[in-house]
Length: 577
Image (tube, rainbow, N blue to C red; front, top):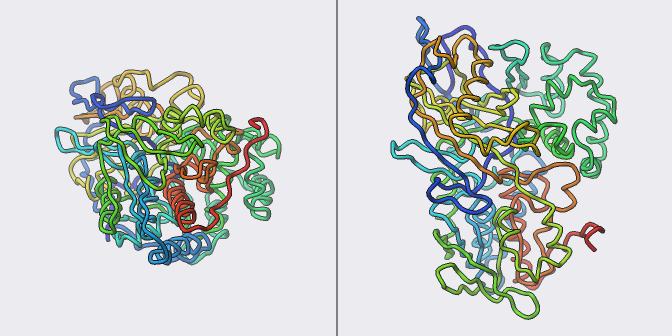
């Protein structure tokens, strides 16, 4: 167990905010990047007055971290039981058929999930990852100093049922560092101050969420809270049908349609939009926000958050790979696919590798991000309506920032929701994460979003220099913490190093009208299946969505190989027929 004890009175708050999204996509250092998804990474040692940040106060800050037990109600939800039943289905299939070879292209969470469950079902999955690190959107590497550089700041929610099942199945639940059940937001109009939603233990959903909002006296007036409720009632009554029907509306359009006060957007929705998909609310589909709210309103512990106790390639991906190999599968890195070679009927004959090798299997799965799938798609498939619709999807850019300080900044043992124009969420990893834990020096990890005009920014930050991004970040931090941080060197602490991870194409951009183009895992090609968080599943572009998509793809393959009818192909939007 670990908790956060803060000696400074202004830090009595013990948790900070909400992030549903996984920030990043397949990454490599600058010397290894390539293609539309290439992530640009640069670590820079920073010295001198241009990057000094906050003078040490006379009162020394002492931080002792302590985690909270696994939330009691996580396994007591329909979504968790549904996920557990699907997991058990694979185990039950293990001895019922002939072992088949399945090649899975992509070693991110969706590809590893697909392989894990196919191995459970008694098949031989072969994962081919083009780079020398697993994880895809959750990739991480060590720099020359031994510090971990992560593609994104990733948070695990109680409302991630398939992810929670996966941790239990791999017997690694102890690697989740659960934080107190709170959400804390930076106050835009009161720099240096925060406000919180406090979830009272023992109060079930949705009452706990409603009570947490009603008890907060700083973000919304009582009248504004009451005006928020009526437009959300159809979501609770009609469920997913109502949620899906709002995809043509942006968050701002939905608010206008239902007469919601603008302060709801300024105080709540802007925070959710940037955390869920790195997009401003006037650009984001309302289906995304409603999907998240529906999960959180219906699951008592859905909003409780956990950090992984270390980097994801070693602490999550490695156990998945070990499980796959133990059951007769394989996970191969530095295996770059050149093309899918097809039979006359359009099915996959084999994979042609960049090395010249040919790889043959009984079934093939693509578990690469949507932008890579578009690039790899055979021309023969591209004219088919099912595959042609995928051209309407593209990844959204995001930047992950690491800043190492020479001393310990004031902090809390949780995620912080900044609500600033440029920053989505951040955390002091030297307090929140065991692997980074340091009582003497802080390391902030921050999500910089939105990053381009599509997402709502007034400039393309992916094209900006590292120095410009660091300076802009420090400007935002100086606004959030005016008593501690100053870019002009007037207050004292030194940023000793920074690392900027640019992901030009991350999770799919959930702008209005995109949901109908998300393809099913089942495809019109008899031996080819899709996985990836952009495919059709109810958890959107998140770690949970990636794991679920791989699991659903494994179900399609297992049913096909077992002579059973898989889930049908999703109907294609009429405009492509």
